[in-house]
Length: 201
Image 1: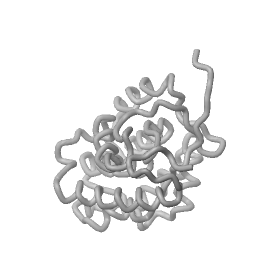
Image 2: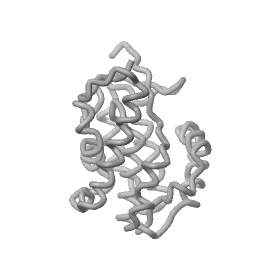
Image 3: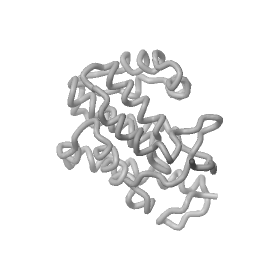
Image 4: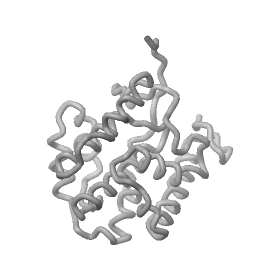
């Protein structure tokens, strides 16, 4: 079953196709309309605005913090009861070096603040920080998808792999539309979550 959506789609595969088509279109609009100029890089508000713009035509919860606990495989993302505290902590993390920025990105991935669409919006958020602080972005065409997903799975324990992968893919083509869109086109989706219940203290 597909997650509840504005499109009235009940098949998860069909929803995934429409979601990709619409989010790519919206991502391109963001780039061409100067959407990022008004955002404060590294803040949760910036991430929320990115997520809202990408998914507002698909989900009612676009830009809103999730209200369920979610897991991917055996990994449980930040529990609801700690999520807002986690987001506040992440926002305050330093972001002046490549290592600091990737560490912040890893922590935001562990938080996974949205019900769906975390991967795409957070990659754009990462590039926004890199662009502001270092005049660099990630060329996602240089990042092997399987290596990336494995590195992200391991990053809560050891983040050296994801740091190496992303550092090697940095480019100074910060205003290149094709480089920007590769983060969406390459479909490094870390979506498809399991919702679970837990006893809140």
